[in-house]
Image (spheres, one colour):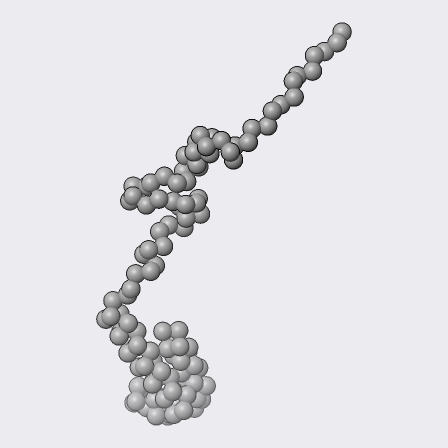
Length: 117
């Protein structure tokens, strides 16, 4: 008994077939419009979302508030690092503290926060 071998498979070049490419993009959900009317160029842009919301300018009041907060934090931090006894007296109004390390650590933390802001 001889078995018939199937004919060799023909390879389809989907890159050149425009209809096949469009079907593939439709299945992947790429290139179509979503509910907002936004056209996605890749699956990654669909997952990550729209970049326009990150390009928007922040309100001027927010920028001013961040700057003022950073200046106040820097001032208190410098005072805590250089004059820990005076800061402790101003805050607690008690006798002076034995150790200056906690106040200086507090000043370092405030300085770090002000640099982040």
